[in-house]
Image 1 (tube, one colour):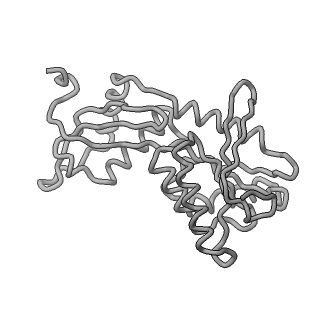
Image 2 (cartoon, one colour; image 1 turned 120 degrees about the horizontal axis):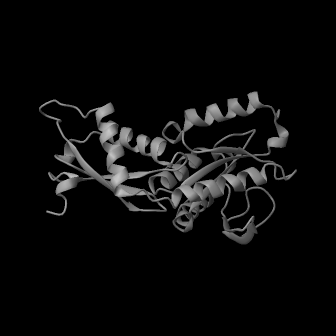
Amino acid sequence: IVSNIAGTTRDVVEGKFTWKGNQFHVLDTAGIRRKARINENIEYYSVNRAIKTLKHADIVFHMIDAQEGLAEQDKKIIAHAAAEGIGVIFVLNKWDTMDQDKKTFASVVKKQRILFGQMEYAPVCALSALEGSGIAELLKTAVRLYEQLSRRTETSALNLALNDWITASPPPQGRVNKFKLRYMVQTQTNPVKFLVFATRPESVTDSYIAYIRNRIREDLGYSEIPVVLEVKGSRRKWEQRER
């Protein structure tokens, strides 16, 4: 079911185009509306269809009505995308209906950061589908995110950085929760995944994992994408890994 009437599109609409030598394959899913306006059975289908479509996506353009903001179900979809390591761009549509100044944009971005505190890295773009404005900036941002998703860091450089991060903020040293990070490798690109080896991996705290993940973004060129970081047990240091 597809229609240009808001809220009636249910099926995924596909399209392809090329922009500045970059090929885009777009999957347009049903919009998510506020609960007061929806049939919950239909909306449940739409949300789950959108989540299933994520497995085919490199980057999500998450469209948000600049006037109305987010529906509750938006958070579910975005959280799923981030957990899977999929790039996310928050797209403020209908920007032509807002005061188009830097102060207004900064205010809207701040609100997004509050709602998605764990995704401060995700870029926000303003767009007017009616006027066609903001499209070039959106596509440029998408290309930049795809480059980050495709980026691979050499293991030697990664472990030099890891040593610096540990020195700057050492792990807890208590008897119960003491652990050491031995070394780290990048296991995958798009989505970007790292595996860190640690003594007593069960003791590695969520806060320390978040610290390492954030340093990966800040220092290694993954500043606008989610990074998946897994922990595995090992008592060997990087220099001893082949022994």
